[in-house]
Amino acid sequence: MRSLPFFCRGEVIRGFGRGSKELGIPTANFPDSVVENLPSDINTGIYYGWACVGNGDVHKMVMSIGWNPYYKNTKKSMETHVIHSFNEDFYGEILSVVMVGYIRPERSYTSLEALIAAINNDIEEAKVKLELPEHLKLRDSNFFTRFSSDLPSTTASSSQTIMNGH
Ligand code: ADP
Ligand code: RBF
Ligand code: MG
Image (tube, rainbow, N blue to C red):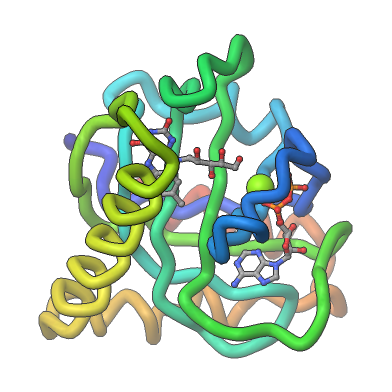
């Protein structure tokens, strides 16, 4: 996938309200505008990378892009599970992410337990892979440090365009 690493950011919106929190794995959903702007070589499936909420710390993340075959969604979604415990929800905040690697395609599982186990495997894989020096470098990129709600939005979005041009 030529487009990796892929940098993007957007507002955290309400998802399907299916309560992935009940699975113990909340996912922050991006709006349609972000999903529609994905480059064509970013396939559906599960990715890992770095994420930051507002101007907060940068954490490891896993992301699912697609139609959640287990649930047979009709709408393509892009959902990020940040590997960190937050005290509060952050709907309406700006989530910045860099997708650095691909893990696997989305699958339909025969039980909810099997889906949860697969997601927990993805989280473990992401934790290990992100320790590689080439990935740690992206955590420190100025894509995260140059984003501030104090900056004019043109500055914030032009840094995103520059980063995706590598
Ligand atoms: P929804 O269907 O609205 O996306 P979820 O059950 O997937 O609902 O929960 C997602 C929400 O949980 C996020 O939008 C965010 O506000 C909150 N949240 C709390 N902790 C996390 C986390 N570690 N990763 C992602 N979202 C989290
Ligand atoms: N949904 C699927 O239907 N199949 C999958 O293989 C799948 N893998 C996921 C992997 C990760 C790391 C995450 C965060 C989500 C995944 N999901 C998958 C999406 C999951 O079904 C979704 O987050 C919940 O339904 C809540 O919207
Ligand atoms: Mg969600």
